[in-house]
Length: 201
Image 1 (cartoon, rainbow, N blue to C red):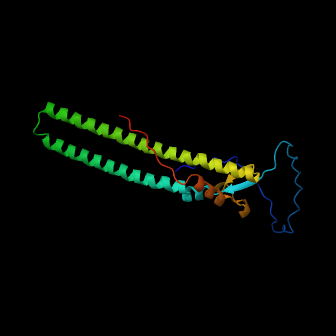
Image 2 (cartoon, rainbow, N blue to C red):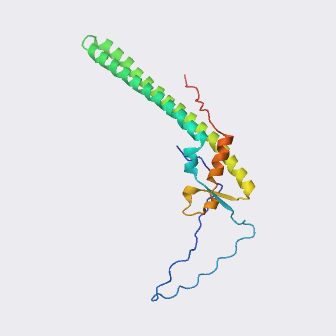
Image 3 (cartoon, rainbow, N blue to C red):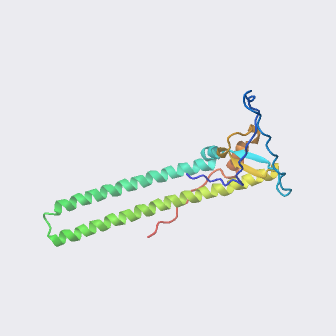
């Protein structure tokens, strides 16, 4: 499953922490020039962090999508196995008839069999595209609602930057809004019904 959260922005921070004293034999480091003051038009970052992986795993909507897709995958697997079995049986029967049929008759049946193989391959490819499309549409539904929740929380808290936890090396616990995001998302979207597009004729 692809990651479905679009962060408002990506921020790379370098934090300065108090380290061990410098060794006596090392000369003192040259003073680092002060960075130019930020432009007056650039707002001070007010940051929050969201654990995207946890939401993908535990959100009610995501669980409902996974459950439905697992059932669809089992059905798809059964279809593949049945078609493969039918084609193997047809091929075996064709080989048994090889010595009983004329060259023209055998060639005709062989072409019919190859057409069946091609049709089966096309069908299964279309079936896979159908499942992928249904899954993608369900994920887009979650993405839209999740972004709405993030924007609501950002507005309420005055946030101007929300970062995926997976992109952060260190963050204070107070900055993590994952639990609140999950609770609101579960309330707003407890379930997503997967709708598969019609198969092409």
